[in-house]
Structures are given as structure tokens and as C-alpha cells.
Image 1 (cartoon, rainbow, N blue to C red):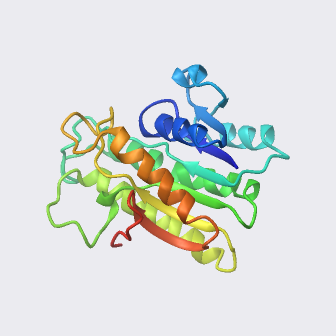
Image 2 (spheres, rainbow, N blue to C red; image 1 turned 180 degrees about the vertical axis):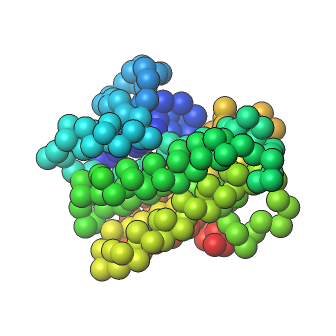
Length: 222
């Protein structure tokens, strides 16, 4: 089995690459700048900034002729000048940065690289439980929430435009994890999250359709 993991230089992406390597997968993983990926034995490292369409196109050219059972886009950000700022307070520049990084750019990658995934394969993106509109009963982290909801909506539009596509499409919610993005107050360690994410990705391979799931394979409310 072969996986292409976009955004794997640290945190959840790095852990997911390591997890699949440990399960015997062949893994190609990307970084934006030089990272610890180069110390991960067996991984093939590519460089791309997914916010730069020309770099995504160049990556597609470099991977021409390759086929992957899994394309998974992990790249994302939680950071604005003030992550707790409401939509009334956030600067336009910060809002645009988060939206481009978390919603637009991942889906551009899916569009550009999807033909590398065969009919039996899986295309996934790292979403979040905070992207759920139905489950937002507490507010907080409004810009991040909005970006993940936008990602979910764009993935749903992609699925609608490819209604006859037999591939499995996944929006994964890994839980609140202690990473640079999740912060030290998060409830889960990487070791408590990523094996479950990998289990779910493997379990849903070949089932087809679009699914919004948590690390335990349970459906998340839209």
C-alpha cells in the first residue's frame, strides 16, 4: 500500500507518516521547509507549499506516473494574531490566512492530485470536530471553526461533482491533540489520536462515498 501525506513535517502529519510506515506502507510525505521528516527511515520526502498553486502543480509533475492508495492532506493552521478573537475582532489578513491555509489550499491539492489515486483508493483531509455546525454549542476559536466548516463544505461539493466516483472520501476529526497547533491544554496525546485515525482510514478503504469521522470511526455531525 502506498500513501501520499501532504503536510507531514511535524505534529499530526509527521505522526501519521510514521504510523503508516510502521504498518508496512510505502509513504511519500511533504514538508514546506526542511524538517524532521528526513530522519524518518523509509519515507520519501517532497517539498511543497500548498498555498502556492505553482508549487502544487510542480509536485503533480514530479509525481506523474505514480499511484497512491491514499492521498491525505493534513496541512493546516490554528494561528491568527489572537486565536481566541471572534469574527468581530479578527483582522481581515488573519481571517484570509486561516481560510486559505485550512480550506482553499487543501482542496486545491485534492483537485490537483486526485488523479494519482485509483478507483479503489481513498482521498482524505484532516478536518476537526470544531468544523461541525450542529455541534457548535460553546463558540470559541471562531475563525478556526469557520475554516474547518468551509473545508467540510468544499469537500462535500467535490463529492457532489464526482457522484459516480467509487473512491472513499474522508473528513477526519482527530480530536483535540497536544501539538503545536492544539496546544498544551489539549485532551489527547498524539499516541492516543493517530493510531485511531490510521485504523479508521484503513477500515473505510474501498467503501466509497463521503464520510465525516472521528478517530474511532464514529460519524461526526455536519
